[in-house]
Image (cartoon, rainbow, N blue to C red; front, side, top):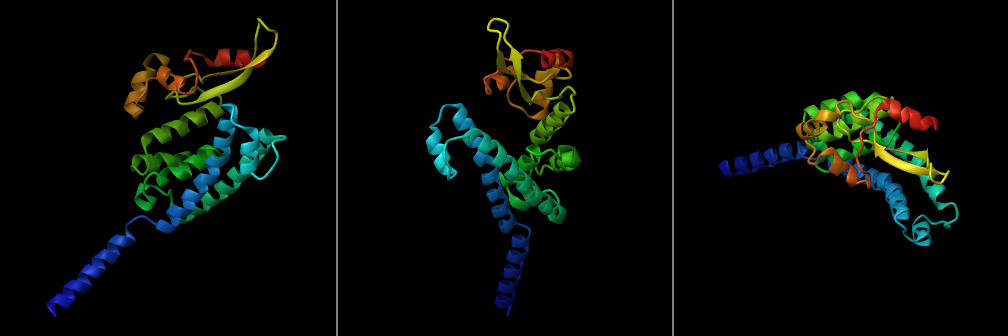
Length: 227
């Protein structure tokens, strides 16, 4: 009798633990969403690095004519669909963090929101998820910086790179220039980044995007936009 009771108790404990483990159905769903989120972005990066246009076009079942604009437009369509999926998940479960779907799947919903025009609607949710360690704090920092940049304000952590067409005085043509969006406290930015959990100073971080770090003010950026 004791052996039977022990087996039943053990099975019950295993069931309870399983209930509190990762939601595998939700994890698979989010992983599929991430594949779609990254598919178009990876193709655009490959094109910018000189990859074969015909090979990439075949991946999407089309010709290479107008491929880049197709990728941009279709990415926006897929991003909108992904956002609807993620909002449905959030409504049902709250933010799908590490305790619900494990890592790195806990970052998928963040990716989708970060690539959407709805950051302002979800930034508080992301802050709370970071505070509960459901996602790394650095993700909240990046989203906060993105929102500040979108609002034309100085960023805090120096995570956002901005690109724009700028007149080249020597050629008379416009060049596409990338730079770190202005930061609020440039004198202490590396200390701020370190405290937030970033492992690179801002100059090294910028170099990963092929950008040489230079301090810009909001006024300087506005002046460049008007040229």
